[in-house]
Image (cartoon, rainbow, N blue to C red; front, side):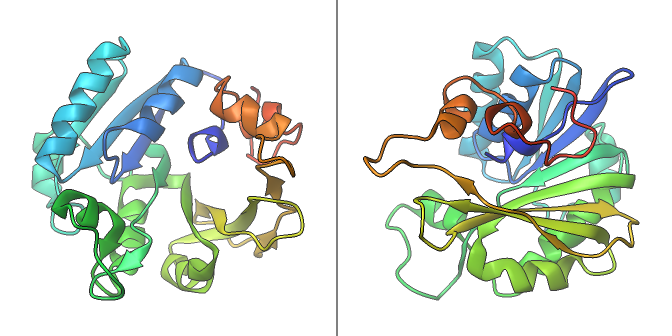
Length: 235
């Protein structure tokens, strides 16, 4: 759903950064659908970086997708430059930050999984600072997170991205949205907007037609759900 929220652009190539990319799922899905997209993945865990490189190769996307092994909470401008990644150069930056806080609740038994699912308290602000650091002026940030984190996300993006728009994702009709996709534009002063939500499952647990379009066919949200949420979409 995060990848489907990325808008296709006209007028030549555009650059997308997948932050905390894991094995590259979201970034690769963007590259597969958007043939003009140049995608950079950034991930700190060596094992996930290795798998992401394999996924890039297996999907034949090596000419348009690359990966940088780095910790976004610590990486320097010089280190990014050495990896060929310039700051403030990306048209869209996307992220699926860990949903949980370290020390809160029961951690996953597998260390790698635990690291992917939890982060230090207040680190969400650091993630949003990094997104702003990498997006060009007028560039967009797209973040998928649990709905309960929306107030913290809005606060973390304040002064960095404006024109915030929250898209709720409802698992079933009549249920509160468990996840949201939050979009913002660097430098915008437009007011916050809450969109009507998207439904993922029917009553019998089958995916809705819109969710099928995204998950099975690789369509954008505009095509799958028949609505142009993403600015500039031409899918």
